Image (cartoon, rainbow, N blue to C red; front, side, top):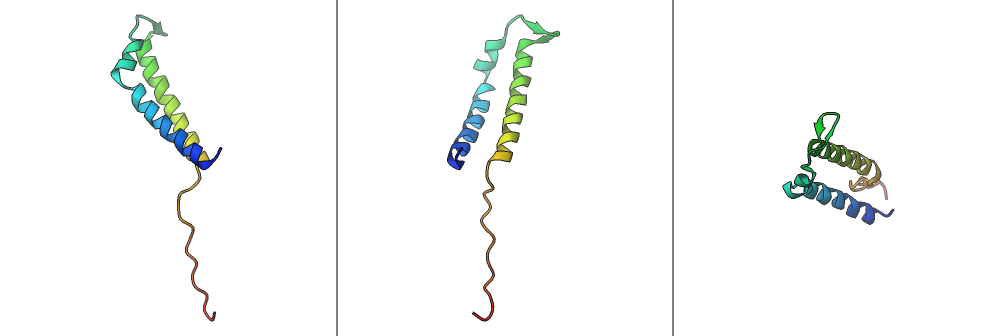
Length: 78
């Protein structure tokens, strides 16, 4: 992938994560279902959190560094 596509994907991950935590989407999982005694709404919130942390970790490794190249010192005698 090119750097531009990776930056766009990282921005999408951020926007998706912000929207996925909004109450209208979280309340879609307000069902009377439990997984190992935990409400499905809570499972959704923590599964989403784990997915966003994993995505951020992956992007931190894949995205290139934005630091400017080091400045070269002028050579004496030239």
